[in-house]
Amino acid sequence: MALRRCRNCVLPENYPGLRFDDTGLCNECIAHQRRYVDVDLNGREAALRGILDRYRGRGNGEHDCLVPFSGGKDSSYTLYLLVKKYDMKPLAFNVDNGFANPEAQEFMKEYTTGLGVDLEIYKPPSDLLKRVYRHAMEKTGEFCSACVVLIPNTINRVAWEKGIRLVAGSFCEMTEKPPASMANMDAVRFWNIMKDGFSRNELERDFFFPAWKRLWAIRYIDIPDYIRWDVPEIHRTLAREAGFIKDVSEFRYDCRATPYSNFLFNRIAGYSKMDFLLAGMVRSGFIERSRAIEILSSSDLSLPPPGFPELMEEIGCREDILSETEGRSALDYPGRHSIPRRIAGLLRKALH
Image 1 (cartoon, rainbow, N blue to C red):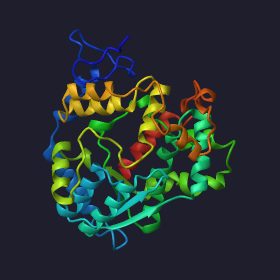
Image 2 (cartoon, rainbow, N blue to C red):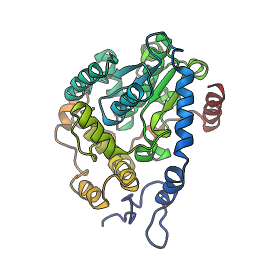
Image 3 (cartoon, rainbow, N blue to C red):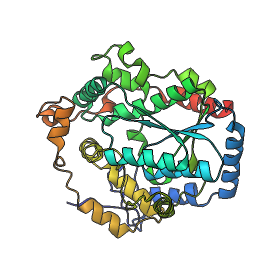
Image 4 (tube, helix red, strand yellow):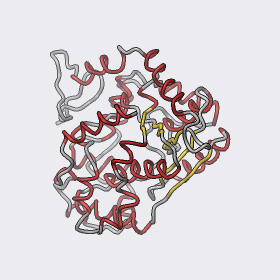
């Protein structure tokens, strides 16, 4: 039996906390208007300019800020704005997680050269990454939680080491926000997953940047929080400026593990990442609901995508890894309590 979906945004009925009104409209659509439409964009951009003015020239002399750069549309456009509109000197920084799309890597090099922006790519030791991915897969039935910890920790470490005090990210909450119940991977939970397979010292550099350093010395902002993030216009700009040709419905094309990540997420959660990503795009008016339904209907997540056995072999997992991990989840392991996490967030805002 097909899942009931919101009449507007395509979220399925088993999405956490979802409720429908009498017309079939979900509570996420109702909240979207308040969070992202009825806002003072002029005031927000003024706040962004104030932040950038504060950090311009404050860093190591070479760079005002660090931009986490994947070669995707959002981080590419963030770089474009910082250079062309806001007169910043960013360092484009990429973490190669071992699944980098060669096309995206080549685009990153060409694009940053064209913008006159320095690019640095960091790749942790391949053997360590494969061991971490394999261990995560065996313990939790997925391996993307490792990247959720690896990438921000590496970004903060490099910013600290280079004396850069502002990180300008490109995460768009309006179109990409995951459900809270599936977005709470933190260093405590990650260590509880990893500790029977690794020493703390093995993982320290890449996965455990000291929280106090970030709290006191590094400010993190996401540029889409401050301006109108118009995805079709972003695509048009990048096509014009850099020959960037992608469909607005494409996600995470910079990582070749994306289809396998979506499959494993759906297996654990009962709905896919594409469900909430496409829902965000529909709510924001960037794609039609009919197109989102077409994309979702074309994907059979009851079976692993082609190439899944080869990817598992690449990280050292056995052929029967799916049957061995049935019912497992990262949420089986305790994480940081929510109250200290909220206090830390408030302190970061107050200090910066």
